Image (tube, rainbow, N blue to C red; front, side):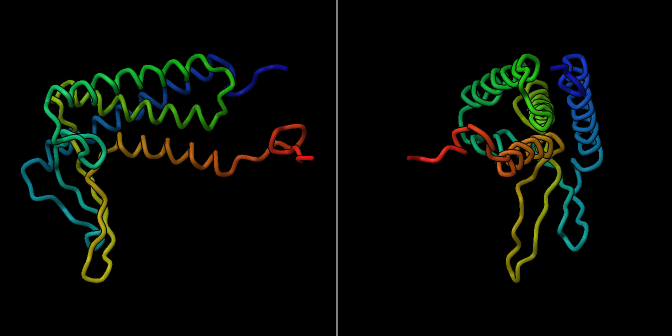
Length: 183
């Protein structure tokens, strides 16, 4: 059986490098813009406050989880452990031949976002620049997301691709465990 498309090692590496590079450039260009344009303002609201641009620095993980931990524990968890996990993702991307194209895209997006936020943590004293926020007015209450950045969007898109691929995965048709009947 011959390899084709993104299954070829060279094509896969080019795709991975392209996704990670584009993600990093978009992430850090947008963070630089946020620092220069939003840092000392109260933020900006669009579409009836559905979308907000407001500067924030996050010392924690997703939704500021872990921000109350000591600085040294945050460093080891959010910088040290994340570095190990991102290293494993990179190794899997480069070495596992049986990855589906959707998994290559998903893991590349997750790697891009993770590295983007890791760079912030390393060069911004453990903080990550966030600047986007979305919400839906619901009567007198407004349901809002946490404040996020382009790297977070890449990570979430990668996770969405993985979940979608799993939900829409076809069951084996012949001889697979899912296809066998019990006697």
